[in-house]
Amino acid sequence: MHRLFWKIFFSFWVVLVLFTGAIVFAASRYLDQISAQRNATVRYETLSRHVAEAQAALEHNGIEGLKAWARRADRVEIVPVLVLSANGRDLLGREVPPRPLERLQRQSRIKTAAEPSVANIQSVFHRADGSTYWLTHDFRGVTLGRFLQRPRVIGLPLLVGALFGALVCLLLARYLTAPLERLRHATEGYAAGDLSQRVAPSLGNRRDEIVDLAIAFDRMAERLSGLMLSQKQLLSDVSHELRSPLSRLQVALGLARQRAGAHPAPELDRIERETERLNELIGQLLSLARLESDTQPPAPEAVDLGELLQIIISDASLEARSRDCRLHLEKRVPAVVQGNAQLLHSALENVVRNAVRYTAEGTAVTLLLDRDAERPGWLSIRVSDHGPGVPEDMLAHLFEPFVRVSDARDRFSGGYGLGLAIAERAVRLHHGEISARNQPDGGLAITLRLPA
Image 1 (spheres, rainbow, N blue to C red):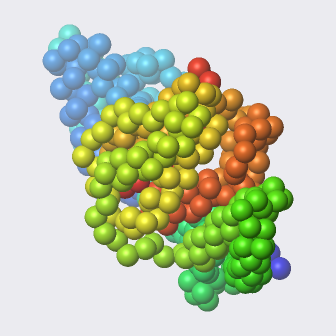
Image 2: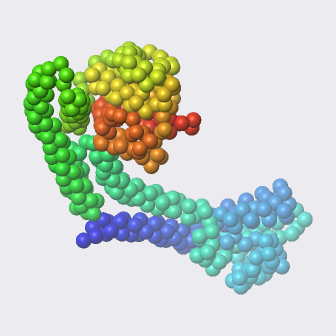
Image 3: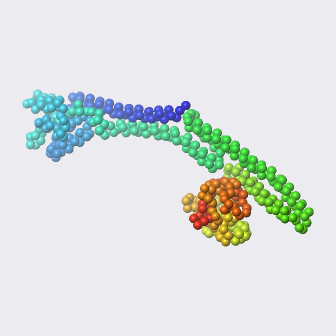
């Protein structure tokens, strides 16, 4: 049931086994070296080398040089090297075991060079003033603590064990994070509206909890995709179906006006206004349904955003003058993007008209076209009004369909909560971003970002 659990467990267990094996190998290797040093020939060569080094240190730097050499040898060698004076005391003040003392006593009784072994003769060296020093190895002084404290002895095996452990952990980390990275990319696609991505088929023959999670994600995406397609289809079908009775209503309204003659009833004017609003609403619903059903970007063409904004400003000026406000393009830079001119016109027009509708009378709606400061190679268009603004908790929902924020922004006529939703979908199809924020001095600023 917990397959991933056992994989992680056994991976860490293998690392521990490898690390322990490296320690055991290091210990056995150096214990073998210690045993080899007990061999007469190897012991003689090692002792001769140490005696020569100690003699040279004594001749060049005196007794302090000999002590410094003894300290270095003690730090490096796993077998303690004892440097004893004629009275049997170690130069470094270490405790001298009984066996080396016994060998020292035997050495002191030697009268001729023929009596002792050659190794014993070579373990003695003299100072210029006649002082005698004796060098010996204390094999009984080899302990586990001394072994672990010698970096030269244990360093290489530990390094090898650490490298093997790092390799196993690297493979384990890659094994765990690779499918999670695919899940992250798929989730980002879901958030962007692309519910066609599936993760489980890309994981191969894996059988663990991550695969179960990927299968659950795929089922969720498939279910959400079906629901969203049904919703979009319903929205499109209802909008199309409403067009027919609306057309018949307009024809009937025209006939009623003809019969009324030169003095039609005021109710007919109200019916005509409501019919036009209903026609506009259905048109926006159809546009939204079309944008929702398109997951691929439109066929690209070169679109000059500066010229597009000038056209929109010219079209919206009449509505702005009716509210005693004006439109001002504050800054313009050469700005050409690849996209669909009709969709970009619709997106920008909805944002600009929304700002004109809610800005205070006698103020200006400012449009700023510039290079994006946060993303090199992107362009930004900021549309700012001087209206009542939007509550902070509603900014995230401003681009959802049919969202009416508050009475403060809805007390003016017009608007169905679809304009900004259409703008968001159009910008998203161009791989851009749209966001809104309240300005410190009042009003709302909507920023559209598009890759240049």
